[in-house]
Image 1: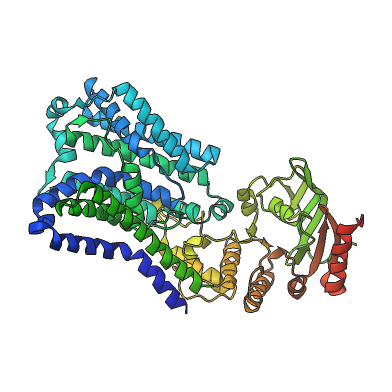
Image 2: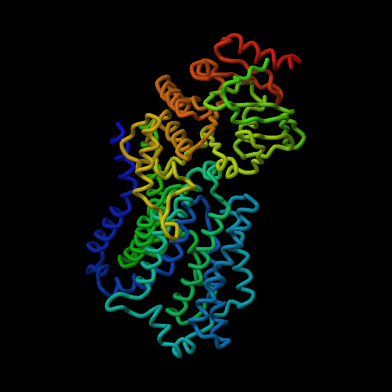
Length: 326
Length: 254
């Protein structure tokens, strides 16, 4: 009986690789001239996905410990703005990036302090923070894009490090995988990772066992902040400019990606592999539908439907498991 | 009616403990003792202060007034960490385990055996988990399954195994048999008997007097935040204790 129950849980955890393969196959076959698997398209996907992918890694980890962060949509462009100011001030971009990471972490620290301190739903708090930073940024930048091409061209090494190629593979994907591996080790093999799962699965038990759930959540927020900082620079260098509209829509897309990858909205459930695959699945679906010349609004609708379907699937499987173990 | 077993050492002694939550005076100068290898059943009506007393012992709450002695020494229990460091482990009602985590990760929650940089020593953790389970007579197939796949009785077993693995000297159980089937209740009571066999003192709260009578050495009745009665189990019966509880809450029977 015990073996049978366990089998259902395994199916749930493995649903994202299956979905990934299915998505790739569908678009490989059905896009006109199989454009989806054209190396140029794949290369373009590889360059674009990590912008949101890197941040989504942090969002997934935060959701496992039971909280949300919607502020990423504004923290990302804000960090990009700060980095652009560093460039203008003549700061070496390597130093600028190193300096920006803790600055991003401070954005996260602020989120953590307010969420933990007030005990209010993080969805609302971080939504408000998102609007606050966005308003501030629009005011400061007057919504004008700022070109950084002239600065970047003086530092080809920096440009190559972030947006170059390692053979056929764009550096962006390598950075994404690097972060995924490091954060994956933290999540799955480290004590702190167990505290993250415990905090999300049963915060009272975690607290009773001496885990500081406030600290765990705050650190997760800080990780997201630092990831936003890195992604913002990677994106700006690729675009050649700062734009106040960078990151718009990331907050919901990241949640969608993470949920598609099997992360629970209620906390306690999720895997690094699932988070990564979820990110790819969302991007692949978007890219594939565009290549199939589905009108733009259709793409958004489809993604919305896909996410709901995934949530239902994951919940249905979990409910079945719960019933069988009664 | 206080009977002290003169042959055992006193493991835990609480004297004159007061606890207020805002204006509510929950513990009103309560005295309470537990001896080594003794199982004490804590009973009383709802709101009598049983849970609060337990939480003061386990460090979840801090007493506003009063003294606590553990193994003869006066101690200050200001946090759950202090309590655990002394050897006081608690199995909370429905709060003990994280359902999505594996048995091993639950047993070692917050105390994961690790190598450098905090990386978990998985083999050690799994091996010691299985050892902790078998030491109370719980035989499960693998330490990697999520605890949500276990039955209620098995889950309580895991929580109890966790408590004794960390060399508890006194284990506190808050309603350990609630919502369990008859078979599962027997399993849990067997685990508690194993604790006694190991010389570990046990306090448990329950509303079910029949369960207490099968393993407690002594019954302590709490009412209005005070110790109303402390009786050896063999000198009383379920009916007698019920009467004391009911009388204690109706009148000024303290």
